[in-house]
Length: 625
Image (cartoon, rainbow, N blue to C red; front, side, top):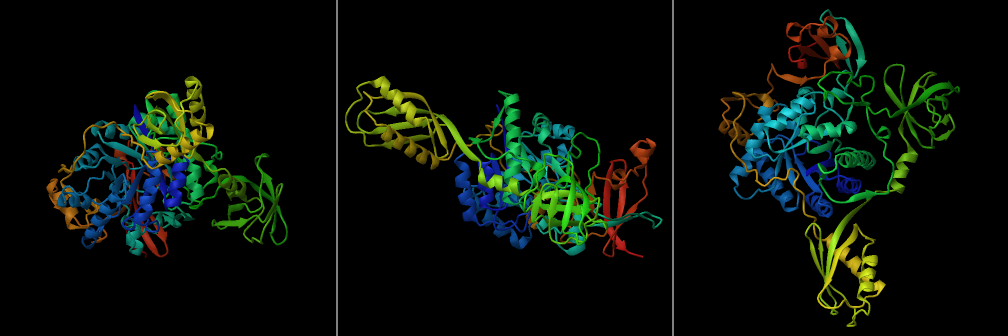
């Protein structure tokens, strides 16, 4: 049976625990350094504590070390790998192939699995084979792939495959965006991206005419593949990843619960083929709704191998759920009357609202007092009659998540053996954990052995802590001792407490019997260009040993004048209905679209259209004339 894993983000231990409680099979979290989200670091002791909690359910903890490294950072990186391994982490997510060099240089010291980050831009079978041959046990695939491309990669490798299913999208191929580094000297590959793709630009044609004014032309909607989990599983994905290591706890709770329910539905439909990658059932809690948490609108991007409307040009921020339009305002614009779209919508005091102002900017306000279709708020001059109003903070929904926390419970069969009327018992769970108990029951045998067995079943088969136990068999070496209900309750509680201390046996996602070990791969290309992000001598050695003939330095080390700052399947021409192929029905190989230009804050960026590959390039900016 194939295990399917729901992988959740965590900015800190509290978010990580909440994700596990809501149904995550694994959590990824940053260590003290070298994470691609610079503001989401965690000390090793916190990771150790999170690992201890996760392992109660057989859930995994993956630590990110997914920035490129400089030579003077390699020893610190190795030290961190050793520390998180000792803390109990289940894998380390890697971008820089120097990690392979560190493993080779220190044989026998690093045995924790390594996952190749999405920052490795894994989008072809050749790249996948290369990385697996180096020793990576999991590949985190590029987000802009189609199902067919995923299938081809699955056919080429035997390691685990992970794919993003929800959250923010980088507009370009992962790990190969140099726009932030070029503009501000802050590298996305070093965890300090300025999110230039969310900035607003003017679009200029080659005649100098302004086609679009002040729009977030590179900003994409957010991913939402909740309805495509089965398609992805059938294509070979084993881990479904939620983006958001900077998101707050309510976002993670809501999205994890939503996808966990969807995954349970899939497993129920395909009974006997799939199962969850960890133990425990989530009960109680709130009803999730991903429309009520941060999103820029949703897209399935290129999953079906076709292009649609992917951009969030008007608002690079979360707008929330649309609730209606402004029908009237008082003089100082502090009392708003709405024409609400859905009569079932209830507004709450403290709700947050957003709208697009007349100048195209996104504005927001808080509803101090909400009654029916009327909102009283502070004066908001940008409001106008006819404005579309969105709710981006639903106070009642947020409070509901706090009032009704999810509870995760492991339901397991137990075999109980009593060694006679001397207060000894041995319990074995279905996953092989053994607990030996000593308890005070006196020395009197139960008069009615069958009734005593029934009483044991009745008292033990109740919830205690994170456990709900089910008696599979009761055996005894001699007659069962008489045990009162209170004594049996004590046995149940102690048994649950003791099981809490013993990690569940971790499931093998792909039921592998062979261990992947670091090796020497065959680099599928002759040249390792700047796009390989080689920023230290160990990574350089890995590529040389893999057969790379020439090696360029990472863009962060040496800015190449001819470098592509970004390459993407998203195309502004297609998005705006200006695609020559689209309008004339020509074959892509015969189409040559003239360049366009992005202007922002005095800088000019050239857009080049590779119509044969159906890709758009953002090139090095030229001085504005």
